[in-house]
Amino acid sequence: MSKMNFFHKKIQFKKAAQIQGFDIELDKENTRRIDRLVDNYEKSILSHLDEAYQRKTSWSDRIADRIASFGGSWRFIIYFAIFLIVWILWNALPFTKIHFDEPPFILLNLCLSFIAAFQAPVIMMSQNRQAARDKHESIIDFAINYKAEQEIDDMQSHLHRIEGELMEIKKLLLASRQTNE
Image (cartoon, rainbow, N blue to C red):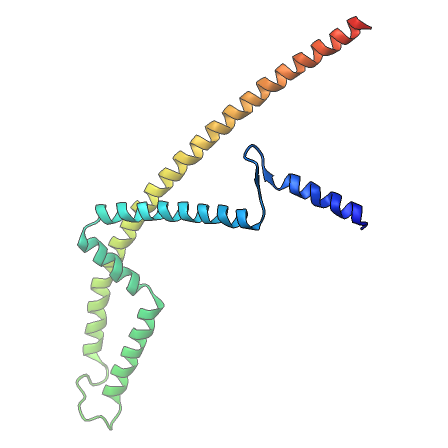
């Protein structure tokens, strides 16, 4: 590529790298600034949603959500697996002095049933609240999308109107050119 062609391409890029109507060049600094602004805007929306969630939920609901969050995590699975292994080894190995739950581990079975009986409803309550929250957010998303669609339709109708007016102007120019000749 010749130097002249290179500089010509660079000038074209500079012209194309401006936000039309705002005269902002899209260099790296401005791009980072725009990204920062968008990120801050998204964070503020999320913080408002979290604040609304904190206001609308009771402390028992938030505790249930935390229990469900922990109960559905890898951390819980790993801790519980370690607990089960220690329980079984402690009660099954002959060199441990105290065996509080001999095999077939009836006390362990009772503990597992107890945990399952209380953990399942708590997780279901948390899922129901999350479903309600997701529904609320989807209604907000739908409203935003609907409004955007209306604005796009308005812009398209304006463009069609402008296009019609341009066609009329073009016809008038052609007619005036023909009468002048």
